[in-house]
Image 1 (spheres, rainbow, N blue to C red):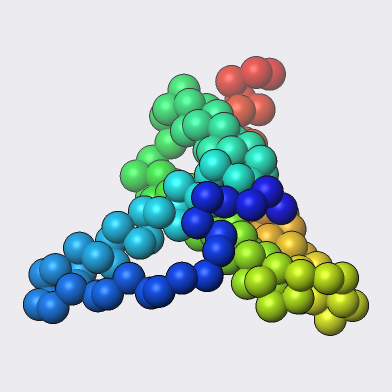
Image 2 (image 1 turned 180 degrees about the horizontal axis):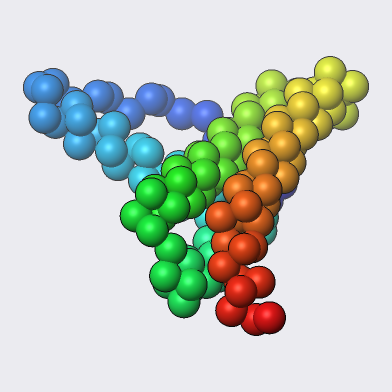
Length: 138
């Protein structure tokens, strides 16, 4: 893992007082997490490209609103799970900087969950887009 500029421990940023200021603080933290995920994880960028291709294919095939909703939901699940996997990897690296078999198990299990979700998304895409694509091509 490549060290980030702020990898050293330091004081925790103070959460601002007030409801709206607290929500804004949380939103900025979530956006920073997404930026970190997409900047450091090649698979996250691959998933974004795949999402763009599925979107273009869905547009070309003229899928229904319900099909768009299903594809949107499964896409959000994949990207969210990638962010959770990234967070877990960062946390395991923080807790166990040296190799430990339990740390490997945690990382492998998270990666396995990601793999299951990707296989599920491929099944959904095949089920929703496959028949229309077959009709268009053959």
